[in-house]
Amino acid sequence: MIEKVFFLIMIISVLMTLNIQANDNDLVKVRLISEVRSLQPGYPFWIGIYFNIKKDWHIYWRNPGDSGLPVKVTWKLPEGFQADEILWPIPEVIKSPQLVNYGYKNNVLLLCKISPPATLTNTQVNLLAKVSWLVCKEACLPGEKEVKLTLTVKDQTPSFSEWKDIFDDIRKQLPLNIKDWHMEANVDQNKIFLYLKKPDWFTKKLRTILFLPYDSNLIDHTAVQRISLDRGIYKLELKRSSYSNKTPQQIEGILISNYGWDKKGEIKALKINVQSK
Image (cartoon, one colour):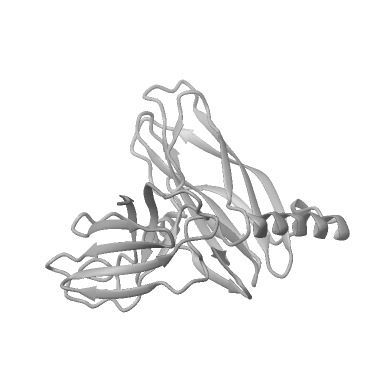
């Protein structure tokens, strides 16, 4: 993408001009935290990459949008440990002239479930992750840090750590699956149409729906997403990106509505993964 190439050139130019190393600034503070105080062999537990971001700056979601780079995490785990995929909370839509990006400001926790082996001989284990990011305001700076977490191994149910409330809060911001919503997708040369059949128990009328794709080249992020409702089926009309050269076979991403997708209105984002027709 021309815009993204230009964006990366701009980043390099800024770094060369200012001679700044992102690791030496305090724009982003990163640490590895755990929901539990210890781990029990054979029982999965949750950890997270916790970001504290300086006011007015932001980092990026898995799809950064028109520019930027997503957070990357590379795990260094003891033998026999397995890490699930990162769970990303709902991002903010960050607009600037001619660009739309998706990311996080202030604080965010990226969750990951860790599965330890059934047998451990050590009394402590070290979990490490190499984390890289791009933080932006008017200018952008790349950052990288290796974070470490040490947990005691105990053959008993672990107690929760002081971070428990933060884990609970961020789970409320995760996109979820609700099987009662039936989804389909049609694609033509210029547009993508998403069809959402609402469940019988859903009585609210959604006035806004925002689709954020996982593929940054799928849609025009700056284009208006048009919504309509006909006989219980919502239709969302999306403009395809000029860089979407091949007809997409799979439409993946999240659907955001401030009205909520469940009976209580608590689930603000749905996962979508449908084959296009």
